[in-house]
Length: 270
Image 1 (cartoon, rainbow, N blue to C red):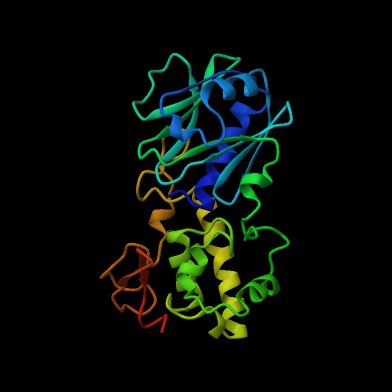
Image 2 (cartoon, rainbow, N blue to C red):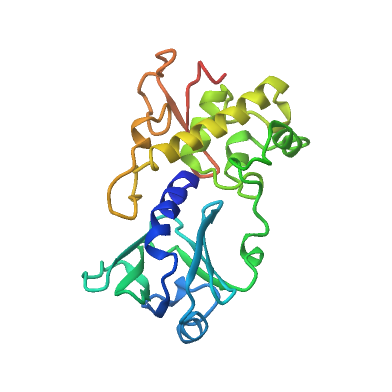
């Protein structure tokens, strides 16, 4: 699933071709992708609205429209967004298309069909339950300490909980825990002050690195232009099972936690 760096990369690539463009029509061939409207209602409400801003909240893309509505798209496991010429043949897994006034289309390709499209008056109706943004100026070691306080969950599944912190997924949780030298099974309420500081720094480190490298093309993720990100070439433990740790040469181990593969160094993360 695209995580914060992959979604941020997509947002940055879509701003230039979208902002100022007017939506002329919407087509869809997989109605379950439309979370808030049927196709006729979506067309009626969104037609002739212009894209005014393209932003991100957690793993959601948030499009502010000129009529006051907000278009929200979640890519889920296999989603991909791109603006292309309307004459370009559509990929068979493009299920929702927004036609634009300059002869281009915003196409939502979604092979596994888990992605969702929302059109809402109040974005908080979709985004309101999310935790803090880990790269926001208001997120600090004190905020992290407060959110960890009293929690007895293991650290790996806690980091994946979007109500705890928004945007961190499997790749960046494994990487952050490695840099912080925290075992993925450690209980949240057992972390020391130094470990909380280290975890805060590690979360920011791996997310910034992921954005700078334009995401990790490990599974289906590619950038809107179809090229690959580069974060997969900088991971330290994620999907490196059996390979030597870069710091101590101990083979990286893999366990399953809450049905998710988890990778760690048993020496560096005791």
